[in-house]
Length: 202
Image 1 (tube, helix red, strand yellow):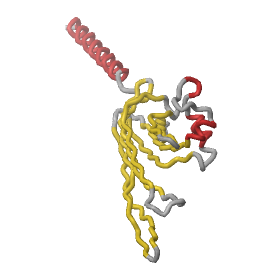
Image 2: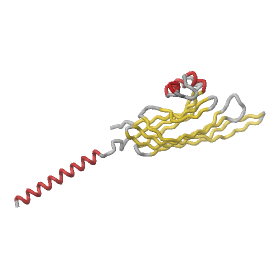
Image 3: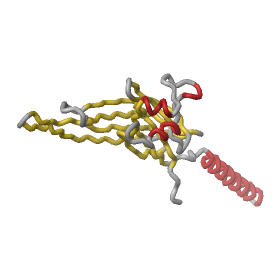
Image 4: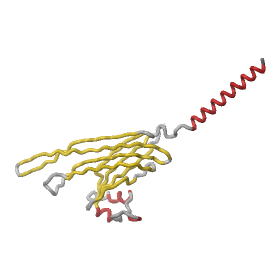
């Protein structure tokens, strides 16, 4: 009888130890970023060709004369030559998606002799991201923006712009980078992204 009880105690201890071992293994397999949030910021920056040349940027952007965040920031010191023309921010959880949409109507006044009219222009932003953290932050993003700008030197309708970017990148937390750009004769318009892991309040 004592032998039977001794065997039962040994089996019980073994089961407890095995269960504890499984619990430890499950804990080790938990995703360390499960409750992590990432702030993703997008900035659309237009820089004149003249300002880029002054910053030492080659028109074809190769080698040490290529574009960098620091060179773009130096161009922003002169608002006549560079400006942030659009932007958006979203917070997404690890391995989750997030989006923001904004639409509005801008009216521009047009005078023709004694006649005055107001023309409506639709503009807005659409920013969608999905995020995943594994050593670096992995982003899938879509950014679209449209807007109208009045040319004070002209009596005609305003200039309208529509820009769309989509892609996938890996980024270091808190470090902005150029995700894309479009270039014309007078300026280059950049999409700058920055993804930052948010610190826990705990």
